[in-house]
Figure 1 (cartoon, one colour):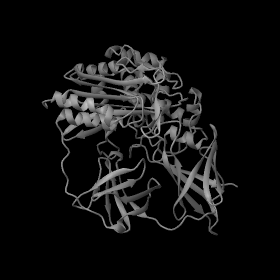
Figure 2: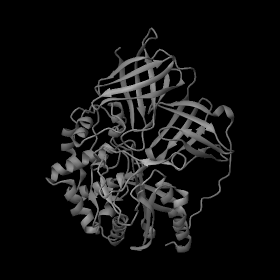
Figure 3: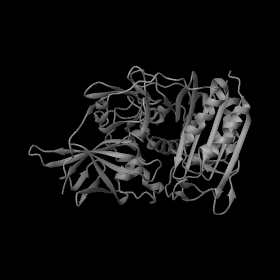
Figure 4: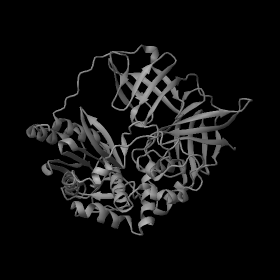
Length: 520
């Protein structure tokens, strides 16, 4: 085991409030089953001058996913026992159907339901009730990849699992969390708090930053299974201590949750049972992050080192980066200096990735680095001496007309093709998706285009559209019901044999390849 430099770790913890600025935060470290460090700063409510404390309940958001899977393993056992009920839950799926295990491991191919709320006309600050989820999820007719072959984050996987578990056991999810996880771990104040419009103890989440200032975030969604748990720092550290106490138990919940998973082709997966698997140096790490508008959190566990880190903010700074930085200090890890290479100017530009149907662009940064915009927010890659640009999640190699891209975590290796030209300004009109039973209305305002979505959840706000290449547009979505928002949607225009617009396909990383026909 690594010899931990506690003074260095203490210094790193004390530096967090300046490095990740915002109203308040909490951090804790567990080593060998004991809490060795705990630090709290700032305010749970700036206006009320309510300090943050180790006993402040904070939403742990998507960290809830592995608690849901823990309940499944503890009360149901084999996920396959839920497969028949899953078939009934998704009656319209065509082609290969996902299994409950695919849901557990984010291999279902089901489009993320929070991304779909945008296409269904939801306002970012609107109300999404408990009764809204199943009608949205159950109307799925297709998956955006064959189940079991890829990884794609989908909150709906765990919302469905929660419903199936409740039906199977005849007990509420709140009761099951208490019996299977909170009680055994000694998480005395943790609770399912699915209505995000109600703060469990007055904590406020904040949008904004040091430039704009901080303002209270508005949330009005109901979530359970995919998120919904609130816990204090003390609760979360109790969970990490429980993980250590049960580390040698063959039937221990966390040991079962963190078991290695594979894809259908036998390739090792980097996600399973609501846990992400990664490495820092040669140390295997399991963990998860979470986000709600105004909140960010991350937990990391290094089993071989008996070491855990928990970071929670009531603002939108990067809790993942903060937790990872602390774990590196605790492990004595320093990133190796890589030999620097470069790309020629003609290798940068605009591309389209064929499997996902998503736009991709690259631009140079400082020497030896580039920015990749694809799937989510911009990713900074380091160009190596071998000409391959890399980050922890992706590798890119330019090959003349395209970019070879590897995304190991998603089990995706592909070649994005260069696209060019100017998008034609004849796309205004109304488009209908049969699968979603929803519409897109595209409007030109003196040559500047906007689009609005109408569907199950109402009539949404207009979103700016920007030309990307010939018959390819980007639709900007920076705020939505969930956080973070989808970002840029890729809109591909389709034409008939006469060259007239006949329809479009829209997609983002969380919800891809959705077809619409032009109806007006």
